[in-house]
Structures are given as C-alpha cells and as structure tokens.
Image (cartoon, rainbow, N blue to C red; front, side):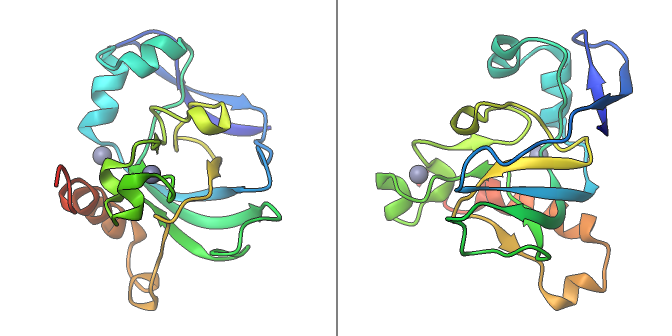
Length: 171
Ligand SMILES: [Zn+2]
Ligand SMILES: [Zn+2]
C-alpha cells in the first residue's frame, strides 16, 4: 500500500489514504515514484467538479499532474528511459504515433493522456498526489539535466507545465 491524497466530494476535503501500489499496466508503460508535485489551477477546476473527464470517472479521485520523480519500473518494450532516471512529466502525454505527433506537435496529440485527468490508454485516471504513478510510455518524457539535479525539481516542473501549454499549442 502507499499514501495518496484523495477527495470523495467535489469541493470537499482532501484526505491522506492508503491505496494499493500500482503495477505496470503493460509492457509499454512505466512507474514513476513522485519526488515533487505541484498544485495547478487545473487541479482546482477538477476538484471543484468542472472537468467532465473526472466527473465521468467518478469519485473518489486522486488529482495532480505537475510532477517529477524517479523511474522505478519499466515494461519490456520501454527503451527511452531506464530505472533510476529522474524525469519530469509534461501535462500532455502524447502518443508519439498519431498524425500530429508525426508532425512534431505533441501538445495537440489526437490520442493524448493527461495525468490526473484522462488516462484512457492504461485504464486509470489518477494523479500525482501519491507515492508512485503508473504511466504510458510516450515520446514526451523529459529527463532532468544535471543542472536541475542541483536545484529544486519543482521549479522545473512548474516551467514544464507552462512550456507544455505554449510549445506549438494550437499550431
Ligand atoms: Zn498545470
Ligand atoms: Zn499523438
């Protein structure tokens, strides 16, 4: 079991609960142990009940989508990262293979997932307010460079959310 921050009512209190440890969803997925996670206004909208994906998923719910951490498990088909890599996770997890991704436009991916909002491909819809997060492998993972290893990784995560929203968005 691991700790997670969970809400059971939109706009209601968030409690620390114990939930099952995640397992690899398939051989193309990975699990990241969260070292830092931010709180974004998008999380606030989800908590207030403004997001259809979360409403369709239902409660209780574990939010959070701006995070960085360390790779603790990978499937057999994952080659871009390895166990022990420190990574920052972008809001939009692009599929890497659709027509938009092929045009190097991952922020408008046609088959995207968003941690803490939509995780259809791996049949879960959970966020980063917990110890370990299962993720589909995508081309959009960004390793933390040595410069940031000396800094607070949360700074990078905040920048990453902004970069992800701006980079080729809507183009
Ligand atoms: Zn955000
Ligand atoms: Zn795509």
